Image (cartoon, rainbow, N blue to C red; front, side, top):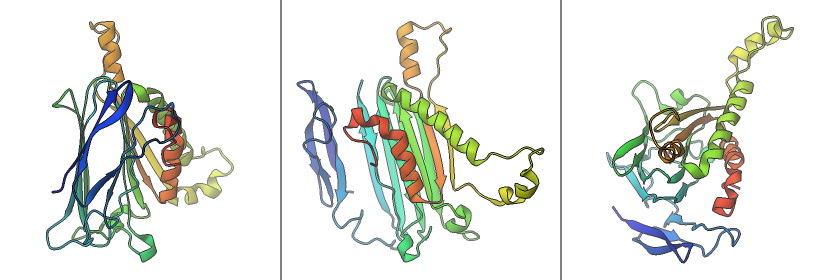
Length: 286
């Protein structure tokens, strides 16, 4: 497996790349500046020659393409992993593993999503296997978030049959003190979206008798859910004030999405992450 490594540190009060190397076919592109000069952020683009992970895109026998990302996020540091969605070709076998090590005041934004395939070629959930594993560890080796998405063509039912009309699945993780306001925002917005999408009229409503059947048969085109993970400390617990604040800052929010169009997920990400422009220099997915 070919490797690359990037280290970002504070130098003279500014975030600076102090070490960077990669080996073909992996390559890093680091622009001098993205966004406002007042923004202290380093952008790193990872690319592979040929437009894909390997030169041969279809699976050969039991072999599969694999990609691994390991990141350590230091004290008061912020890492944003905001890729375009994975799009697997027909019969492809792809596996990715992402491991993040954080401390109590680290902040992490992770977007991990996949589309059903190359629609213009009629490929919808035609790949053989897709596996995405995301692990977050606190203070070295304490598990904070462990998650795996696994899609494989089955003997009795293919992926397309199980996914029905949904063409995109996505996961968004927001962790740490720098993202607290966005955590609250996304939870409220998801509640509103799903409340409107799944709203059922009351029995006494005039429209109920006419639309009840149609409503039951209509699947929402965009489905999302939010949940909290990580340590929770009550202010009444016998901890110092500083420890209580630190633990509350470490709570994360994970949002999971299933959508019928890629555009709807892009729009959701644009809206939810737009307030991160001061941190990143630009609005993600704009």
